[in-house]
Length: 171
Image 1 (cartoon, rainbow, N blue to C red):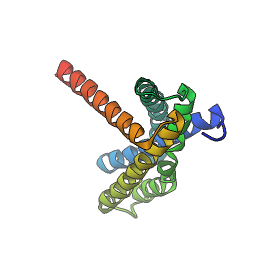
Image 2: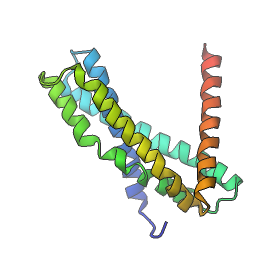
Image 3: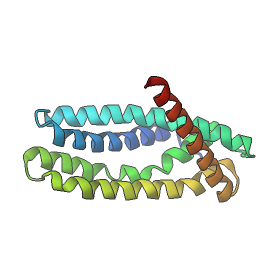
Image 4: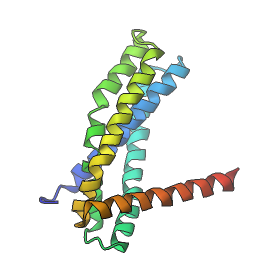
């Protein structure tokens, strides 16, 4: 990272990226349960999403840092956190359209026909965030994009194993 971003900006970006996801999930929940109020839906989606965004950024960041160090990365934990939060900036740009969809759906102007297109747009933005995160994390760890991609794949494999272990342990 050529200039050191502030810790506050990193935390804000992590929380905002989670809020986007929370608002998107709130929109999907809203279409299933019409009795929720719009204010409660927006506040709950934004707050729970922000908390999930912070936890997700710090857990995935710590995992990425550890695996990156294991394969020769030189970045610090905060370099990885900064890089991870800043690569989620495209997802944050979805806040206005997603919030607009929630408001329009609540007012009855938009039906469930907009669920699939909005999910596809959000999916495209998430894929783009992942694509730019590979060189972003390569910069944070000061190694090649190929090593960064390998680190992402190892993180994904580790998280998949953990999720399956938890699911099989619970059920």
